[in-house]
Each structure stands twice: as C-alpha cells, then as structure tokens.
Length: 160
Image (cartoon, rainbow, N blue to C red):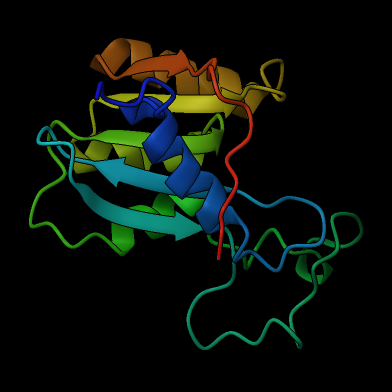
C-alpha cells in the first residue's frame, strides 16, 4: 500500500493552526490568528486578536469608528503580539510566523525585536495603508522575509 498523497503541506498545516486560532477572537469585524514555528517545525507560540488578560470584552468597546477611546484600537492586542507573548520558547530567533493578515507596523516591530526571520501571510488587503508599507520597509531593512501563502488546499475540514 502506498502512502496517502492528499496530505497538507507544512505551510498549510501551520497556517491552518493560525486560522483555527483566529476563531477564538471575539472581534465582530476582524478575526486574525498567528502561529510561530521554530526551525525544527515545532509550534512555539499561537495567538489571536483580543483584549489583554483581565480586560473585559463586555465592558471595552469593539467599535471601529468614533472617538479613539470609544473604539477597540487602544485596547486590542493583535494576534502576532499575542503569539510572541504566549511563546513557550526561550527564544524566537530564526522562527517563522504564520498569520492570516499581513502585520501592522506595531506588530512588525515586535516580530523584528523577537528575532523572527520569516512572515507567511494569507491576506495583504491593507497593502496600500501606510502602516503596512512601514512594516515592509522595516522587514526589508532588517532581513525579515515575507511571502504570501497560496495554499493548494483552500479548505480544511475538522471531523469532531
């Protein structure tokens, strides 16, 4: 008997973990997940966008528009930063980060500072925004590689 041929790639596997993590987000507009993988193909961190531990997601707003303090932006912690902060490894040097949405400039700084050397993303829908352009500029200057994943398998079904 030959081995199965329809298995998912490592890239699809780790992006699948990131996408699955995004389902934990309570944000009504944008759900993003992230997965950090070391050079041995071991997951060392996962995260999703949400509020910091102890900040009530029933008391702090999820709004996108309005006065800054009445929106989610001063409170939300992005998936990439959560994955870095939730890491089980003593170092992230040389790791890859899989994320559903290209990182903003604030997350790019944390990615660079943590030593992550590759970002694999699904969507770059904010490519023309200044914060995305700043991210790419910083990644280019610091040697952090980035690439968009074009998965062969576009759906993964969980059988529970």
